[in-house]
Image (cartoon, rainbow, N blue to C red; front, side):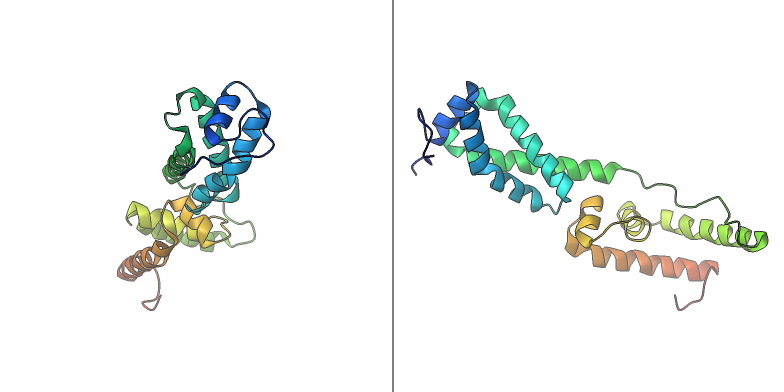
Length: 195
């Protein structure tokens, strides 16, 4: 397969030549590389259902990695593959970092001033018991339920990115977690059996 050419580059137009020029500091060559391959890099990042800001970060980091390795690219004609693999690794890194973030506090210890103190104490105790039940779920179910019910996420794509799981796994994982919670809540007498 012939290398891609880029009209308008005076001294070199193939991808290998653009890489060589960019390594020497040619801004036009660098701009043409970004113009040619940025869509690919962002497409790989979006395939992981990342939020727009994370897609941008993955793209920026991928281009930074290319700058760091401009002199060591072994097969310049396969730059597209190198960029795709690098973007994939960076997207996975973003997902791993998001999954390591611990959920915030799950029980608000400050009673609402407009609520009767006795009811507030009972409500807090029930909330403590409920969140104690959530904490007994598997880490994956716990993280998903917290993301769905406590965080301000706009879509299942956001939830999937936050929990590092495919969108298709959200429904079944949620159903299993809620089913387990229902059983435990009923057994502990925290709510009606038809929850």
